[in-house]
Length: 215
Image (tube, rainbow, N blue to C red; front, top):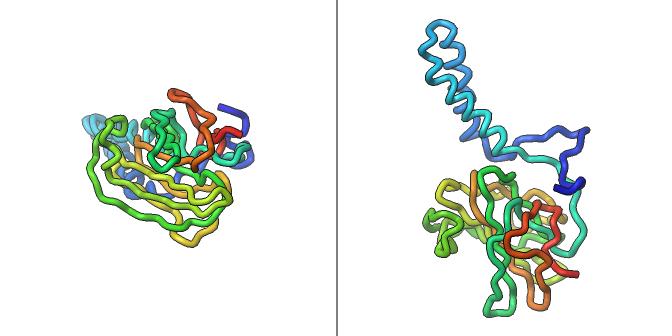
Protein backbone atom coordinates (compact mmCIF):
# COMPACT_ATOMS: atom_id res chain seq x y z
CA UNK A 1 0.00 0.00 0.00
CA UNK A 2 1.35 3.44 -0.89
CA UNK A 3 2.04 6.06 1.76
CA UNK A 4 -0.90 8.11 0.49
CA UNK A 5 -3.21 5.18 1.23
CA UNK A 6 -2.25 4.98 4.90
CA UNK A 7 -4.53 6.58 7.49
CA UNK A 8 -3.27 9.85 8.94
CA UNK A 9 -1.80 9.61 12.44
CA UNK A 10 -3.74 12.74 13.37
CA UNK A 11 -7.02 11.09 12.27
CA UNK A 12 -7.57 7.60 13.70
CA UNK A 13 -9.36 5.04 11.54
CA UNK A 14 -13.11 5.57 11.70
CA UNK A 15 -15.97 3.15 11.19
CA UNK A 16 -17.91 3.31 7.94
CA UNK A 17 -21.35 4.88 7.88
CA UNK A 18 -24.13 2.33 7.63
CA UNK A 19 -22.66 -0.40 9.86
CA UNK A 20 -24.84 0.13 12.94
CA UNK A 21 -27.57 -2.44 12.07
CA UNK A 22 -24.87 -5.12 12.02
CA UNK A 23 -22.24 -4.00 14.51
CA UNK A 24 -24.18 -2.56 17.45
CA UNK A 25 -26.40 -5.60 18.18
CA UNK A 26 -23.40 -7.93 17.94
CA UNK A 27 -21.27 -5.72 20.20
CA UNK A 28 -24.12 -5.42 22.71
CA UNK A 29 -24.58 -9.19 22.79
CA UNK A 30 -20.82 -9.69 23.24
CA UNK A 31 -20.76 -7.24 26.16
CA UNK A 32 -23.81 -8.79 27.80
CA UNK A 33 -22.52 -12.36 27.59
CA UNK A 34 -19.11 -11.22 28.85
CA UNK A 35 -20.78 -9.81 31.98
CA UNK A 36 -22.82 -12.99 32.45
CA UNK A 37 -19.60 -15.03 32.27
CA UNK A 38 -18.63 -13.52 35.64
CA UNK A 39 -21.63 -15.27 37.17
CA UNK A 40 -21.47 -18.49 35.20
CA UNK A 41 -18.46 -19.49 33.12
CA UNK A 42 -20.66 -21.46 30.76
CA UNK A 43 -21.62 -18.15 29.18
CA UNK A 44 -18.08 -18.06 27.79
CA UNK A 45 -19.28 -20.43 25.07
CA UNK A 46 -21.28 -17.49 23.71
CA UNK A 47 -19.09 -14.60 24.85
CA UNK A 48 -15.92 -15.77 23.10
CA UNK A 49 -17.36 -16.20 19.58
CA UNK A 50 -19.44 -13.02 19.91
CA UNK A 51 -16.35 -11.10 20.99
CA UNK A 52 -14.41 -12.49 18.04
CA UNK A 53 -17.24 -11.59 15.67
CA UNK A 54 -17.35 -8.04 17.03
CA UNK A 55 -13.60 -7.68 16.51
CA UNK A 56 -13.95 -9.00 12.97
CA UNK A 57 -16.68 -6.50 12.19
CA UNK A 58 -14.59 -3.63 13.53
CA UNK A 59 -11.90 -4.69 11.04
CA UNK A 60 -14.32 -5.28 8.14
CA UNK A 61 -16.01 -1.89 8.56
CA UNK A 62 -12.91 0.26 9.03
CA UNK A 63 -12.85 3.46 7.00
CA UNK A 64 -9.35 5.00 6.88
CA UNK A 65 -8.73 8.55 5.69
CA UNK A 66 -6.80 8.75 2.41
CA UNK A 67 -5.12 11.32 0.23
CA UNK A 68 -6.42 11.00 -3.37
CA UNK A 69 -3.96 9.64 -5.92
CA UNK A 70 -2.92 11.24 -9.20
CA UNK A 71 -4.79 10.48 -12.42
CA UNK A 72 -7.97 11.27 -14.31
CA UNK A 73 -9.80 8.16 -13.05
CA UNK A 74 -9.11 6.60 -9.66
CA UNK A 75 -10.11 3.18 -8.38
CA UNK A 76 -13.55 3.21 -6.74
CA UNK A 77 -12.75 0.19 -4.57
CA UNK A 78 -10.11 -1.69 -2.63
CA UNK A 79 -9.55 -5.14 -4.09
CA UNK A 80 -8.09 -7.03 -7.04
CA UNK A 81 -8.78 -6.40 -10.73
CA UNK A 82 -10.89 -9.39 -11.71
CA UNK A 83 -11.39 -8.65 -15.40
CA UNK A 84 -10.91 -5.98 -18.07
CA UNK A 85 -13.43 -6.22 -20.89
CA UNK A 86 -14.06 -4.13 -24.01
CA UNK A 87 -17.72 -3.13 -24.23
CA UNK A 88 -19.78 -3.00 -27.47
CA UNK A 89 -20.20 0.78 -27.17
CA UNK A 90 -16.42 1.38 -27.09
CA UNK A 91 -16.04 1.66 -23.33
CA UNK A 92 -13.83 -0.62 -21.23
CA UNK A 93 -15.16 -2.27 -18.10
CA UNK A 94 -12.73 -2.75 -15.22
CA UNK A 95 -14.18 -5.14 -12.61
CA UNK A 96 -12.66 -5.05 -9.10
CA UNK A 97 -13.31 -7.94 -6.71
CA UNK A 98 -13.53 -7.01 -3.02
CA UNK A 99 -12.80 -9.76 -0.50
CA UNK A 100 -14.10 -9.69 3.10
CA UNK A 101 -10.66 -8.45 4.16
CA UNK A 102 -10.79 -5.29 2.04
CA UNK A 103 -12.10 -1.89 3.12
CA UNK A 104 -15.74 -1.85 1.96
CA UNK A 105 -16.20 1.90 1.54
CA UNK A 106 -16.29 2.89 -2.13
CA UNK A 107 -15.05 6.23 -3.44
CA UNK A 108 -15.73 8.58 -6.33
CA UNK A 109 -13.43 7.81 -9.29
CA UNK A 110 -13.16 11.46 -10.34
CA UNK A 111 -14.66 14.91 -9.85
CA UNK A 112 -18.12 15.68 -11.16
CA UNK A 113 -21.81 15.58 -10.38
CA UNK A 114 -23.90 12.53 -9.54
CA UNK A 115 -26.29 12.26 -12.48
CA UNK A 116 -28.19 9.25 -11.14
CA UNK A 117 -28.14 6.52 -8.50
CA UNK A 118 -30.31 3.51 -9.38
CA UNK A 119 -30.94 0.44 -7.25
CA UNK A 120 -31.50 -2.70 -9.36
CA UNK A 121 -32.89 -5.83 -7.65
CA UNK A 122 -31.19 -9.12 -8.47
CA UNK A 123 -29.63 -12.31 -7.15
CA UNK A 124 -26.79 -12.96 -4.73
CA UNK A 125 -24.30 -15.11 -6.61
CA UNK A 126 -20.63 -15.05 -5.54
CA UNK A 127 -19.02 -11.89 -6.94
CA UNK A 128 -16.46 -13.96 -8.88
CA UNK A 129 -19.23 -15.82 -10.75
CA UNK A 130 -19.54 -14.82 -14.41
CA UNK A 131 -23.30 -14.32 -13.96
CA UNK A 132 -22.93 -11.98 -10.97
CA UNK A 133 -23.68 -9.05 -13.33
CA UNK A 134 -27.32 -9.84 -12.57
CA UNK A 135 -26.87 -9.57 -8.80
CA UNK A 136 -28.42 -6.92 -6.58
CA UNK A 137 -26.61 -3.72 -7.55
CA UNK A 138 -26.53 0.06 -7.49
CA UNK A 139 -25.72 1.81 -10.77
CA UNK A 140 -24.07 5.24 -10.58
CA UNK A 141 -23.65 7.76 -13.40
CA UNK A 142 -21.34 10.74 -12.98
CA UNK A 143 -21.25 13.86 -15.15
CA UNK A 144 -17.54 14.64 -15.51
CA UNK A 145 -15.01 16.40 -17.71
CA UNK A 146 -14.55 13.03 -19.47
CA UNK A 147 -18.26 12.71 -20.12
CA UNK A 148 -20.59 10.17 -18.52
CA UNK A 149 -18.81 7.72 -16.20
CA UNK A 150 -20.71 4.64 -15.06
CA UNK A 151 -19.87 2.76 -11.87
CA UNK A 152 -21.73 -0.28 -10.53
CA UNK A 153 -21.68 -1.61 -6.97
CA UNK A 154 -22.56 -5.31 -7.06
CA UNK A 155 -23.66 -7.34 -4.05
CA UNK A 156 -22.24 -10.83 -3.57
CA UNK A 157 -23.27 -14.05 -1.84
CA UNK A 158 -22.58 -12.52 1.60
CA UNK A 159 -22.86 -8.80 0.86
CA UNK A 160 -26.61 -8.32 0.56
CA UNK A 161 -26.87 -4.64 1.30
CA UNK A 162 -25.44 -1.66 -0.57
CA UNK A 163 -25.60 1.70 1.22
CA UNK A 164 -25.23 4.77 -1.05
CA UNK A 165 -24.08 7.90 0.77
CA UNK A 166 -25.11 10.35 -1.96
CA UNK A 167 -28.06 10.99 -4.24
CA UNK A 168 -28.53 12.51 -7.69
CA UNK A 169 -27.41 16.13 -7.93
CA UNK A 170 -24.57 15.84 -5.42
CA UNK A 171 -21.11 17.12 -6.35
CA UNK A 172 -18.16 14.81 -5.77
CA UNK A 173 -14.42 15.22 -5.57
CA UNK A 174 -11.85 12.55 -6.51
CA UNK A 175 -11.65 9.88 -3.82
CA UNK A 176 -14.68 11.12 -1.89
CA UNK A 177 -16.64 8.46 0.01
CA UNK A 178 -19.84 7.64 -1.88
CA UNK A 179 -21.13 4.37 -0.44
CA UNK A 180 -20.62 1.07 1.34
CA UNK A 181 -21.01 -2.57 0.33
CA UNK A 182 -21.23 -4.79 3.39
CA UNK A 183 -18.69 -7.62 3.26
CA UNK A 184 -17.16 -8.99 0.02
CA UNK A 185 -18.50 -7.98 -3.38
CA UNK A 186 -17.55 -6.30 -6.66
CA UNK A 187 -17.34 -2.83 -8.18
CA UNK A 188 -17.24 -2.19 -11.93
CA UNK A 189 -16.15 1.03 -13.56
CA UNK A 190 -16.53 1.81 -17.26
CA UNK A 191 -13.77 3.85 -18.89
CA UNK A 192 -14.95 6.06 -21.78
CA UNK A 193 -14.03 5.21 -25.36
CA UNK A 194 -10.44 6.17 -26.11
CA UNK A 195 -9.21 5.83 -22.52
CA UNK A 196 -7.08 2.73 -21.89
CA UNK A 197 -6.78 1.09 -18.46
CA UNK A 198 -3.55 1.52 -16.53
CA UNK A 199 -4.15 -1.61 -14.43
CA UNK A 200 -4.01 -5.29 -15.33
CA UNK A 201 -5.90 -8.39 -14.23
CA UNK A 202 -4.69 -9.57 -10.82
CA UNK A 203 -3.41 -6.13 -9.77
CA UNK A 204 -4.38 -4.82 -6.34
CA UNK A 205 -6.20 -1.50 -6.13
CA UNK A 206 -6.74 1.04 -3.36
CA UNK A 207 -9.95 3.09 -3.46
CA UNK A 208 -9.31 6.75 -4.22
CA UNK A 209 -5.58 6.17 -4.68
CA UNK A 210 -4.81 3.73 -7.51
CA UNK A 211 -4.92 5.25 -10.99
CA UNK A 212 -7.21 3.33 -13.36
CA UNK A 213 -6.69 5.22 -16.62
CA UNK A 214 -3.52 5.34 -18.68
CA UNK A 215 -2.26 8.88 -19.12
